[in-house]
Image (cartoon, rainbow, N blue to C red; front, side, top):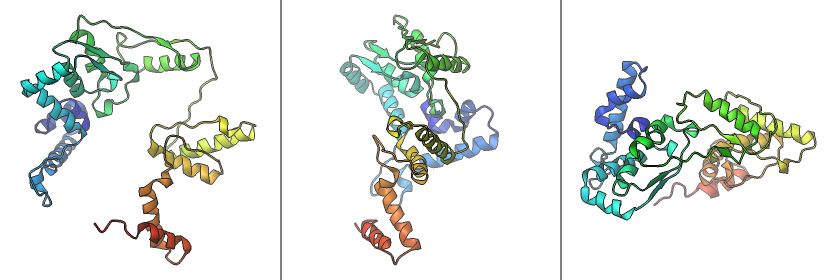
Length: 295
């Protein structure tokens, strides 16, 4: 749903949208998804909510983008106001913007043509939600024939080993050569890369914990090791594996999974559901006695 909405489709075009998005899907799948989408949009209308006190409409994040685009397209006065307000536009990570976002930017820049985009189609990772580097970065030259394309191939971050592997992987992705950027390494060769695949997050976390203990046994200080993960939600499996494996750790830039308020509240309820006559249960009662709030 998010993917097709970000391509500009509306719920009235549900079947067509899903067929274009996934041509191999069977009709029953298309029909089920279309029905779900229609029910979803209907549920956001206040008239279907018995608790609604006044007419209203709920919007999700995709709706905010779509409604902004419709507003700019259909209301000349508002479009002119913001075209004059924003004299220059800069879009970073353009390869991860959707067709709807791209059209919003083009409308805002239509008066001056002052638009500067930064993007690399080889780094696009959000196609699953409708982002299309072909419809954004790839269309820059056609949309702005007087614009200038500046290619920045030098990689100042990674070793030559990583750059070479990245170039090989991106070269196999099917990206049109005219859009692809071949990176050039500035740093010398580094250590060989290794790849490990795991069936689920817990298996991956177990592998990381065992690898750290192996390094520690070989004389490496754990303070010299870092484990990177993409979002805070991924910390749970790692933290559990480290605790079970006796691997000391410090979480930087995020709150530990079991330190989060909602997790501690849930654990307190679980504690009370299985054991009520202990000191731990007493502490659990203190924590959740007013949750949910009586207000």
